[in-house]
Amino acid sequence: MARQSPAVLVATKPAPVVHERVDERVVPRLSVSTGSVVGDMASRLRTTVVASAASEEDRALAERSPDGVTVRAAGGQEIRVRLVRHAPETLSTERYGLTTEVLWHTMHNLWDRWSAPSFDRASRRAWESLHALNQDITEALLAQSPGAGSGYLIHDYQLGMVPARLRRADPTARVLFFHHIAWPGPEGLALLPRQFADDLLRGMLGADVVCFFARRWCRNFLRCVEDLVPGARVDHDAGTVRLGGREVRVAAEPLSYSPDALKGLPRSWPKELDAWVGERPLVVHSGRTDPIKNAHRAVAAFRIAAEHPAAADARLLLRINPHRLHIGANAAYLRMTEEAVAEANRHFGEERVRLLTGNDRGLTFGALARADAVVLNSTADGQNLTAFEAIAMGAREPVLVVSHTCGAGEVLGDGALRVHPHDLVDQADALVEALTMTPSRRTAASRVLHEAAARFALPHWTERQLGLLGIDMPESARAAVPAAGRAHDA
Image (cartoon, rainbow, N blue to C red; front, side, top):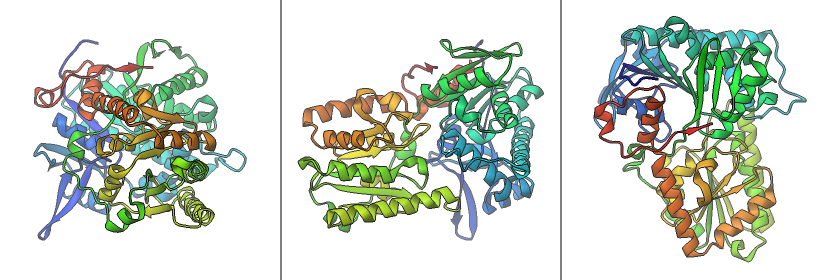
């Protein structure tokens, strides 16, 4: 693909905007945070972002500024944000909520298969709402586009049908679709109705490049295309798909963290927590209320590890961020974790495991800074950016214990201890190894982790995406990017 510098637009489902009250006014600002990597990327590119107006504040802003609004990032950069207002049913809990839950469960293999899933006419009506969402975003992108041949960076799993729509409207468009979460093998994707799976696969294949955080997800995607898309020719070695006279590249582009998002963030470590831990070894597990985060198994593994003298007096802190607790599986996960903590402390006869629920990022970063080991044992995780936050924040060279089904595990190499998310003994052994690691080995592992995190930091991640489309990084953004890392093909 010849290198050019066409206009580049960014689309994402959640609006990368925070609404801050200044005196009597509500002022929109770009969200450049550890949880909003697309907003950070857009601020570097000084480009227009198209996103859904989902919250009440978003909708009010979209009504006041239907053609978009200029917002300022923390670094002073100004970009345009075009918030899309959808029909009420498009984002309703009954329709959009049902569809996103179906997609999340499918992508992360959360179905038990005997009681769920089942799909009825309501499922199909909900799926049509996802089509409507993708059509609205596509139309907004085309309205913002300066013309044929523009570049588009489409981010996250809710917008998987946008690339094919852009392709139909402009065959010369340069489109990259980035799927931020895990992707199942064909056996998992085939649990969806055939039309649902076909819509997703053919929608994504409208892009020039389909990206995931890890090669594991690339391989699964290619297997799905091979099994479920008639006429597609898949080259697993090259990481390409040929379909309808076009070639689509499938690539892994890992992401660690945004230096700007982490800059100057406060760390909180209350005296009461400090007294509870004292000088004892501290293991930290951090994640939102989502079954994939697997905190209850971390508790069970910690109980086994505590049988070893090195962990006999250790503390385990679970830092859980409340997230979408209206979803039954998320609420059940929180209850299961609370029960596991209570049972563990009854077993120990004292409070050696503590659960802190809340969204105070300063407290999360304070826990990561104090940790001697950080366990991230997700059952499936597109990347798990907390692993890299632990690297950046850790003040005691914490050992990372990461499941092999986390995307992050692929790029951390020998710097992390990789475990099986369902094997409690494997996790317990890794915790003991982490807590008994010699200072020299801990330092060497920390060096490997820091090198990996720097190589895949957000500035490099942004530049590599443009490079995959044959688009040059704008000079204004390039100045902040050191030597870029190499793309990892499937």
